[in-house]
Image (tube, rainbow, N blue to C red; front, top):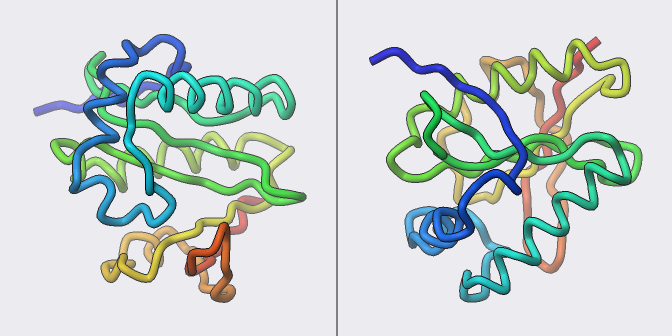
Length: 157
């Protein structure tokens, strides 16, 4: 099957799709900060927060489409002076992670605002080969909102 990966704004996605996506226990398994029920209010707050990043920074998280169908969300969010990349795919699209990330990284390399990307991964993520193949290097372990994450960095210049 041919995959046509495109990015659009989260506001273009039916909130019910996001609720079903984020309520799947397979998604929550590697999201230590996901400690609440994902409902209409949580979805509205999430989309509003991600849109605020677009307004503040001119960049943010996208809804990710494969052949026009919503398969997850991800993109870049400014954390201090760093651009952090995140990706949360539906379980049916877990195999698209490298393909989506390569496309997002191509975007970052073409954007002068992004000299490097950071990645924060929970220690539960054991298969980090794809991240290393992209050229990311381990930086440190950090605590974010009370949870431990492994921080990686990829230079885009």
